[in-house]
Length: 134
Image 1 (tube, one colour):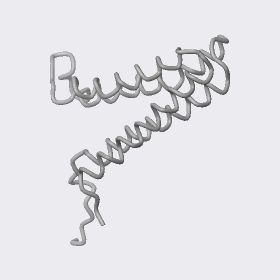
Image 2 (cartoon, rainbow, N blue to C red):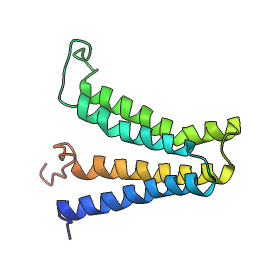
Image 3 (spheres, rainbow, N blue to C red):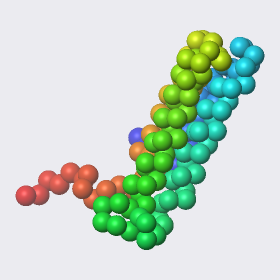
């Protein structure tokens, strides 16, 4: 049974809400608002996909280096920065370990949601089809 795109969006919204909720809980329980900065990184990740996809400039028109690769590069940077930012804050001693754990779990949930978007809403490749003819 295939899910409709509306149900997929509802599932995605639920996954993202859980991830952001865990970050907010990490801030409110331990009275420190710095784990909310990780949410800024998560908000910047889809923006890089929106700005880079479908655009070709002289910088990105070199063979093997297209705007899709640039978009994936910046998306990866933003997602990993959001994931490892709480670890840096714990290392410096700004936040507690439990707040870091909640923020990391929330970050993993947000990254799973981004992978969900990438897998579900991307157009199918012609190379991924199973051919039964020889």
